[in-house]
Length: 402
Image 1: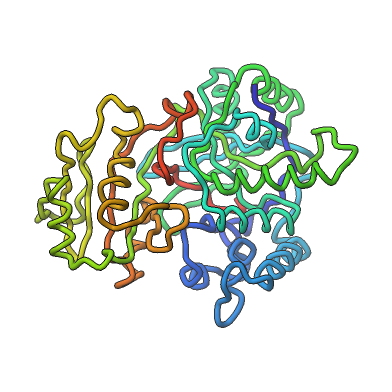
Image 2 (image 1 turned 60 degrees about the horizontal axis):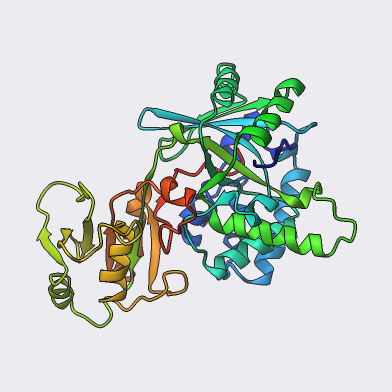
């Protein structure tokens, strides 16, 4: 079973939460973050390169120093205040009239190394290193990881009861998504939550935050090696996560943006696609969305297309080979575009489905945008399969700082 614990959160006072709360660090580029960030925004801590003019590369040592300075300054000014005791928290987010509720808690790095925290993607070393540095220099987890777990009726009841009261925070963000937050500070309830997780919940599934999870595990291992009196109960063994029961999850797409066509003209690229896909221009309103498995949407030179993988180009009997993410990687990214490693190739990037418009400010650097159908990965992660080479699904991340 998994190990969890409550924690004393460092969070904004109620009257300024909307000024501090910010999108996750990886859904905005530095220019977008600089334009969005107000005086109190947590973006000054999670993306501190925006405080320099011109904006510095996010791996510059001055950027990390600025993150430490800003985190201390926010606490000094009272924009972030630590709770007086360890608590659990309930976080709810609402999108398109649907609300999902999760528990905010600390998970243990041992569960990552022991395989109880199950992943469905490989990580990019540069992003993992960056997150590791942020955790080490701050000696804190500024941003939570998103986990899923199998439903537990009693935990669901506890969360529902907590969420029936007046929330500590409740606001709607700039994208129209609702956020609410409750504090569970009753000692008996806290103890029971810990007991349920440690006796009845056998695994967590990383929904979003593989790099942050891997970084937390690496920091814990490093600190463990430097502590001859290590017990496993030290704070460095734990990291912050928001955990949702599987019945609450709203799964959305996470899509590929390619910056060039590997020397091909658009006409040559479409001709190459035709060997493995039925390619049809889309003349409807708005963007084209995949309607079924093995159907993809492609945006190329201002026009949407439907791509239908031809029969025989994938193996229905292979639980990994039949996934759309594998078909896309093998038949398009690798075969035609020459992108062999999605983790390291700088010609490809990834955009969450709800943020599809974010590719268009990239201008001509975003040559190709491909949307794939959604596949629920939890079944495959149960049997320890890596479902994709890079993130295939994601839940809407909570604003940081709330």
